[in-house]
Length: 292
Image (cartoon, rainbow, N blue to C red; front, side):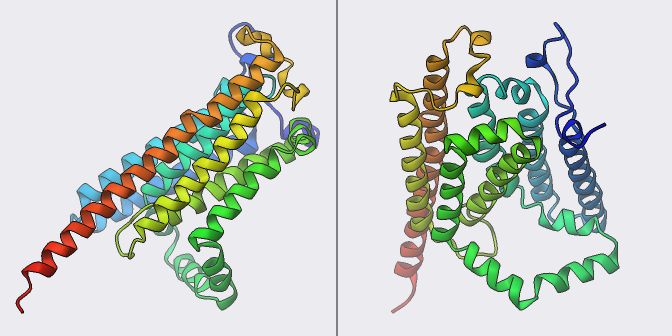
């Protein structure tokens, strides 16, 4: 098998058309299976160690399973194969990675389970790596809310430059790099934005950055929707599979980026704003109850 074939293997069912295939390429299926196995081992070890906190661990496991399921659905089911020929399907795949799978995985807080899956010696080495000054400095810069928002936003816009987008369609390695960068920067963005225990949450900052992300992704969606020019001709060769012309396919993709994805970012902003108001009310009530 050639290098390029290794990165583009898919198995088809049903009518036998490539557009309807399930993608079973090893660079996709092996990491997905490995992540699920490692998480299951670590979660089971944590479960056996103590009965305390089991309801929270159950909630986290369900969130992880949901995020992993969405991730697998985006990369393995016919959505992925269709995405190479139908731009709207490609956009759905990207939004599943960035706006659905990423926040679910972050909300699952899988770090503890993943680390506990490792042998004790390797856990200690991993802990040592995280305390290295260079890595700490890089992480400190990348995990600032504004920086994470910019990194995620720049990644989205750069990959939608026509020459890069169509190059990713032609080269399997580049296509996987595109998906990995969307998911990776999405995980970074949601990790910074979503509240979690053990951290003082800046709700106002989170609301602002979710709004900014909704604004710029919505703008890109509107540009795709209203543009009279076809941006990615190679990604519209199968538009007829959905009964669309190539320009209608592009318009539908723009609508997906603008409305459903915007609702997710906007909904998360409303949720954070509600938490912000609730926490502020509790703090004021506690302050008012303090003597003198």
